[in-house]
Amino acid sequence: MSDTDSTDPAIAPVRRHIRWHVLVFLAPAFLVYTAVMILPLIETLRLSLFNMVEGQLSFVGFNNFRVLFTDPRLSADFWNALSNNVIFFIIHMLVQNPIGIALAAMLSVPSLRFAGFYRSAIFVPTLLSFVIVGFIWKLILSPIWGIAPSLMDWVGLKWAFSPWLGKPESALITVSLISVWQYVGIPMMLIYAALLNIPDEVLEAAECDGITGWSQFWKIKLPLILPSIGIISVLTFVGNFNAFDLIYTVQGALGGPNGSTDILGTLLYRTFFGFQNQLGDRSMGATIAAVMFLIILAGVSLYLFVIQRRMRRYQF
Amino acid sequence: MSKARSAPLRSALIHLALLSYTLLALFPVFLTLVNSLKSRNAIFREPMALPTPSTFSLIGYQTVLQQGDFVGYFQNSLIVTVASIALVLLFGAMAAFALSEYRFRGNTLMGLYLALGIMIPIRLGTVAILQGMVSAGLVNTLTSLVLVYTAQGLPLAIFILSEFMRTVSDDLKNAGRIDGLSEYSIFFRLVLPLVRPAMATVAVFTMIPIWNDLWFPLILAPGESTKTVTLGAQMFIGQYVTNWNAVLAALSLAILPVMVLYVIFSRQLIRGITSGAVK
Image (cartoon, rainbow over all chains, first blue to last red; front, side, top):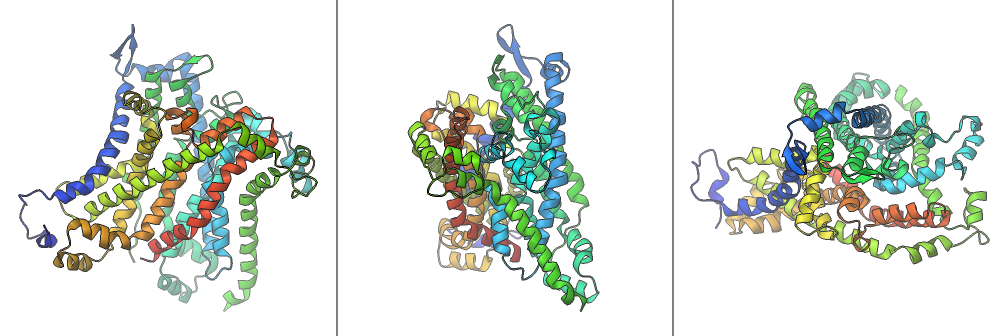
């Protein structure tokens, strides 16, 4: 049963017979994806509109959201987690992505020796799990072991050391930088691939016009890799507002000290499963997940409909 | 040319910058591996030193292997990761082929629907996923993890693979059709071998988050017999916080398989990225 005549669908009229192979090719992916991902997402969003009223799960409209935003007990935690999460994201944007771009720009210098080695080595932390990364840094920054203080002593900065992870004012920044250290490989790789994608003719033309080195990077390459920078920004956004593992490993489910590193992921975990003397609450868990969903959806839509549309894509 | 004169200086600076960052990236890993092989006193007295015959000790590894079932954890992680990657690649390639090869009503819509999951993390559906797994009786089974990770990996796999499949020449496929190959043989025998580099890239991209995930093992399969390495190491370290030898050894054991896989796959990963770049 061949389909040789389907090669010119512009002429072919609406087909009557079902092409079973199309269905067979699509069905497995569609079914697994729908059943395990889309339906649970919808169900979670639906659950956020329900809560226990007199022992019965009943529709409460947006009451859960009202409680989450204004209830004195819960809302303090929520707004704290949200603002920590925003700071977490800002630090990533300001530190991780510029470093990633700089590394990629250096790696893509033509005929650079050992480029393959650097690239592979810098990507190593990205492959490790948060659990490993979290504990390693916890040990290094621990005043008991003294790796960090003695390293800083070498460069005469011992006075500047303090147990950063244990202090509420520095814990969030420290955890964010650990996460940056781990994830810098992703923007690096994506930008590196984008830089390799720039055809030599464009760069040669620039050189003929006397644009080399720094100004070549700023005037020619950077505008050409802007779409990739947009992609890494939105990936960072989604990853950050969905983060959990690193905070859980380094600072525990409470996002200590004193809630200073609590983000939406840890709040969701505590609310849904309960922690210590707090009971698990499925409806409020679903509500927090729904808020996270809306935040991520807003960020992604902003990217897709505003930023990406304005960006010019160059086809070579 | 002025460029030629400044080139040695410039490349020296670039090497300096890249080398310092490489050290920063590798130092913590190196520190962990080295200290896991030392006695407790040596860990504290000279954390930077390489193990010498007098400070060499495997006590940490002994504790880990006696107290935690790390072999079992490895097995679980391996089963979950390999099964998920296999399903993601097979189902993903099939769907990508359908989307890129055939014109049918709803093609674009289906593509968008399947692409949703690239941006929306599956984690947000956890509340209902757990509910579903409980009612399906799959809690504390590796199957539940494989299902979740397959769904998680499919969107990106379909997206990348369909981009690649568009580049496979139509003439080749049509030649196959004229020779009487069925659509299935065209997919399995002509197209799949041609997109192997892309499959390798997808495999690596899929593998890393699955192997490293803590969230779903913690929620769906926290039982002793289904713990993955990531969860096992997390719990073990939580229990033995003050036993530094054991903690460092557990970390090293969790790092090693990732490094081995990376050494095997990094060439394919980079080939995948660069072949995407030169296409």
